[in-house]
Length: 177
Image (tube, rainbow, N blue to C red; front, top):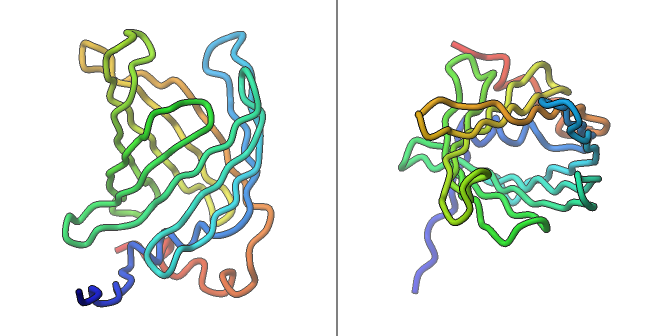
């Protein structure tokens, strides 16, 4: 069986590789009494068309570890990926879009409902890129009436970036049409 041709990276793939580096993160409580969690995330490439985001930190009940994959599927015209973590047995598939100004990456997923055991819920993660070294995640869940409820905010700050990546960092994000 012949191997498929090597995937050529697109502008969207280059956008994702701008995330390469080491980041620290901290959640911001939405509700009073919610525990702040903190940690470190390392983002690396897998070839030219995927990134892996590996996070470790302190969660509400225990230490947390997770792996997110992100890529872009030119045939679908959408960002695709997944999330897995040591706090759940669920596999969370992602698909999403990038805003025209290249400042907000919105990823949709489906997973266990937070309010109705045994049912699936719809979720939306919005990553807003504040600067080359800061991004904010706002997570939402869709309520039964169709409205989206904001349930988590996490701020990420880059602490280390490979020097080879630093040279090309602003090329895509700052070239909005």
